[in-house]
Length: 265
Image 1 (cartoon, rainbow, N blue to C red):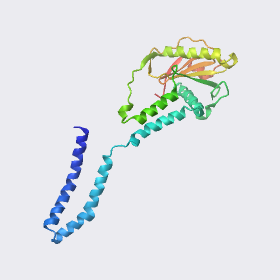
Image 2: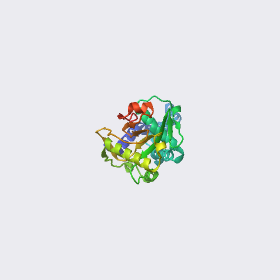
Image 3: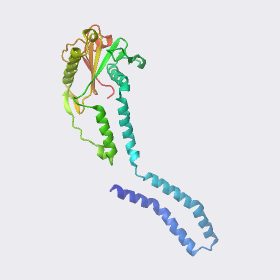
Image 4: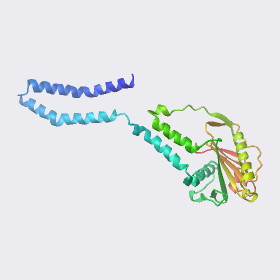
């Protein structure tokens, strides 16, 4: 049965009794208005039954009320605005700590939130004797703030939730390919940004954040060569310590060469 027809049938069922009562009272008032018992029924209708019918009608109206534009858009608007704030410059450390936390949880490393804090350059986040330099791997030309603002514009222009739906056809990428991209980034940083002394004292942590990609087996880590003290990787589905030197933190050495499912997924 169509949704509109269901609503009409429900309203008709709800209103059958009150409408019948109204007609009964009209009949009573017309043909038996001088009877004492009719006067009692008449007063009972107006002072008891009628207010109850008004309350019932109000509740029905609230239940069948169609959500306003503000009602259904507000949670999505709030989520997008929160994301815009989260990716602002003033919350850079918070984002970097989030990536480090993903790695620690996935590798079953015990930690306290108070142990995660800002580090001196060239590090971003310190944890015990680890000095994480956090980098994000994104597609070339991708601008996150533009994406979020476009989503906000699309939301404001939408007439219903159906207008927000998008087809999702992810492209497969192997974990090995992601490792290769991580090592390429490490080599680029080593050649253009950090000197030998900085590199050997820093734990590089890359967050793979490509849109519309699905990570598929094999989950293998090829042999890597890098001057960074350690290199690790976090994605939305897997985390891994790709390599760790003898001077790297103990928990990094212990997990070197291992791939873990991301526990937040």
